[in-house]
Image (cartoon, rainbow, N blue to C red; front, side):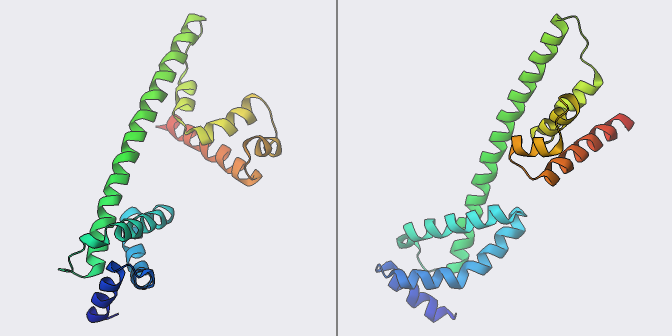
Length: 177
């Protein structure tokens, strides 16, 4: 799409013609998606951010002055949305980490109150992601089969086997360090 056609479509879209905005969306979608995939390295996040960017552009189209290309304006919106998303994710990770550390501290205290020791194995197990911890616990502590665990966790049996394998591999790696 050449610059003159882009300017014409922007003007039509500003006048409320949704078909014009749809054409702008279609002509910039791939460019914007490729930018976001390189930025985020996650296809699911990129897809969501493209949609949010276009929605924000649609809602705030009147503020587009036309001093730059429409794609440049979209990139600035997408970049800010990505940064906001990263901040929210960082905040969520901090909250999760704080809650996890508090839970581990309480478990250590309860174990100590019962006169037992908090072993290195328990420490390594507590450091695993919950998605790996649950299948390992169900398989090796409670003795459920992979098929039973798959049903309980609503996962494919292969996914359960993979999580058990990778979780145990991670624990073994920490033992050797």
